[in-house]
Image 1 (cartoon, helix red, strand yellow):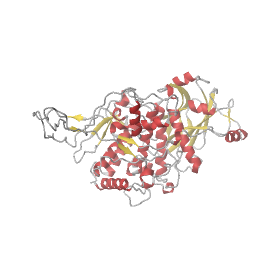
Image 2 (cartoon, helix red, strand yellow):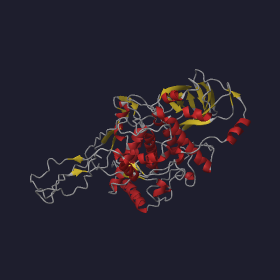
Image 3 (spheres, helix red, strand yellow):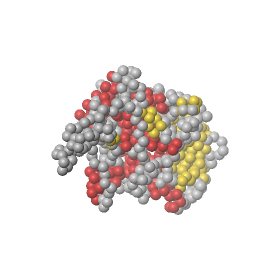
Image 4 (cartoon, helix red, strand yellow):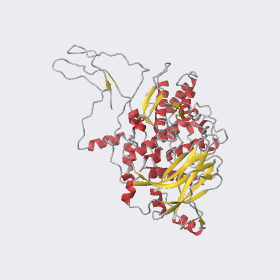
Length: 580
């Protein structure tokens, strides 16, 4: 904990200062430029020996939800540095000269950790719900041109996500915080300041947004705090009401595609949990697979870079909540998504999942590149009133939630230990229904992807790699030169299977990942080309395909039309070799 101590000019010259003196209060609207040190592994935990094998108790303690457990751990330590005192608990000092000696200087204390709670658990907390509704109500009642106004806050997302700004010194290159390594840190800041403003409006410094716990069995429906009361300020009419409880969220949802994951009920819950586990397991060795590719000044997002798989799941949830008819307003479009309060709970859980990812990686900084760490955003802070003063912050300042003074309550993480392997019965059924077809290489020319699946045979750089080789380099499926031939929503899924020579069966194999894009005007055209990277090292182990020289890769279109520039497999240096 750090505190700002400014007592040198306020100490009484008396040897026995019996009366406290107070310095003037700091101006409420001042600019804040935090510079939080988040260096490498200086305070990192030792990473676990393999992916998703960290003891669950360790994960929960690392998430900050078990303060009691953390304290107990401290008691067991053989040695520890002396820590600074709690400046809020200063008592009289002992002196042979004076009684009741007050030598505690004035100070500004750090904000206590605020705890974000699961949305499906707060519905019965009437005191909390009253505060949440009141805060949003007050935000909506502010003047239309006030920076805290509910719809002005929603426009922040539009401005950063729908090409309203140009990059400094690059007048033709729009600012875009999706489709790259900026996605997670920008949204962390967006939620942070939005949350602080809500707390300010109800004079509650402990207020937090609830997170939509969509990665758990109990939280995999649309939270009823946003749907049960149509008169609530949290309600939004521009949603797919057929997806209200008890409908179960489908991570593979796409408009007009009734199949989705092809599952219902408990099977759908299991499919989602396996999808989440796969997202973590395949992305742990290389941060860009989880978070998105680098984006540097002067580069256009969704041009040559690609987003991480967590953003893909997030995109599908946007679609699942929003209106199924075109135009897909509010949650169905980045320009309007912030007009629905559920948006912030969706992103609170996305933020929580990033936090969990970092815990698995021992709090290691994902990218040491200063082009990421020094990327800067601007937001209105919670002390803004009428003056148009902003808060500028950098990516490096938000890598740990406790630096922003919040954490997440302890909830189960069921996808960590879920069994996702195919049953023997399923495997045998696949073999008996086998009907082999010939699959050709991709070739050198771009290929169209629209109504039917595109299946190609892709050579691997090396088969039967040793454990050491896997620790050093992760095997990555790279789909290059993706152009979306529409401005509407678009999605295709990727499957991998082991071939039989140059032949493949009708079964597409195992799901490897997905490309999902919400509607976006100006993103149409072959000149706007993106890419998709999917880690497949652990997937090949599950498929028992490590000895295969080639793989069958299937791109299955769900909606939209695409042009694909190429499909290949590469070996990329890992960030966390022991996490494979």
